[in-house]
Image (cartoon, rainbow, N blue to C red; front, side, top):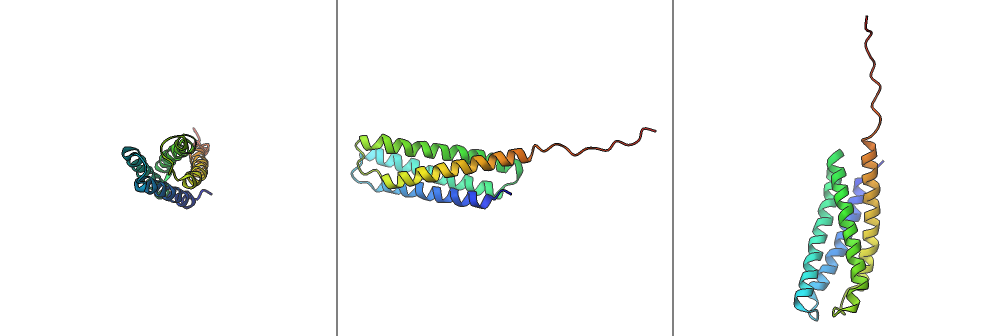
Length: 141
């Protein structure tokens, strides 16, 4: 049986890592001003989206939960992409203070959340596709 609570807990935990990363970028006084603020703002938006989608999928039923899980899968995939970008591109730029440990943690949590949300959405989708119950036809006498 699916467990929406574990998906919500992982989503909120991943959002927490994203939030911590955003705070580090916002507090980085050595980063060029628009870059640190821009990355911090994106992190805040990402954290709020992950937490909201995780909460929605826990509180929804059937089709609404499936839609929230698809949204959560997409957000987690984008978070994974952002962390890969940060780990391989940002160190080569002017942002020497990039929170590498948080990006690695975000990458791991994002991958786990993506896989769990994808698994849960697949299960939710296939649960609604069971063959219909046979209908007994009345006698035609």
